Image (cartoon, rainbow, N blue to C red; front, side, top):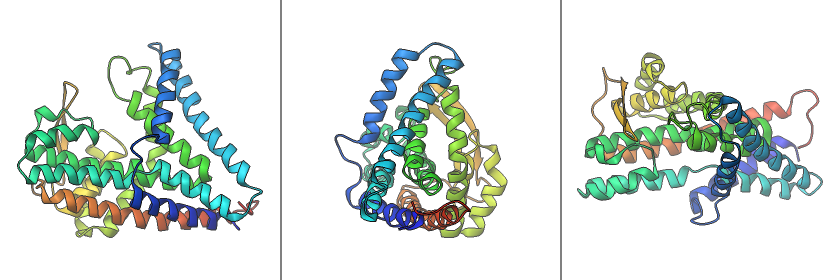
Length: 319
């Protein structure tokens, strides 16, 4: 069976498994990778970019190598084994169902007027300081996190799976996890995490654009999504979160961005879709989750087509 069909069947099965099962409560492969990356950091940390480069190469390269070894091991086996490996890898690296569950749990707490529970759960979704936020600001943070993580936790992985198979799936999730661990601008990681942050920007670029395109196609306000993306994305400090959050803001008809608080730091960001959107409401959390789900399946279709194109290049044969 050709590589494009293996990816199509395996990635679809993996997304269905994620939709049914979500993330495991214990023994998640990404958590195991995080523990290994933390051990590497303890061994390599110096307040130098060069050490951070070594950390990124060892961790992301190691994840890609493990994926390549697994793919090589099943290559001589029947197609079902290759499909099963792709499905397992896809299920392990995507997190769309857990993203939606966490978002809706916070939305439920806000709808019930339980601000304390909403603040308690928010760190499961993003790195904002929940105690500095009121109910409307928490709802906005959730919608922004759903938008950004649709790209980071789902679409980006599918893109690299389409390009490079199981090693691509593993490598992308490794890079994204490294950015979450050391890519932020804390004093400890300002230099050490530079390489991981830049690598995440590079790896996330195609997935973010595909996510934004899918949000335009799948959103309730297509013109608004495209308008906000074109007008406001560049004002966001992240080259990848900007297109995604702006397109979601326009598609949903809301305003995102503004003042944010991270671990004692206050950031004043540009408002996305400010001229046309309204403030985020609690009900918009569920709308954002449903948009994220539609974006996921549209992105899968695009990635299957991409894998078909990759497998048909000269020199490419059975996968």
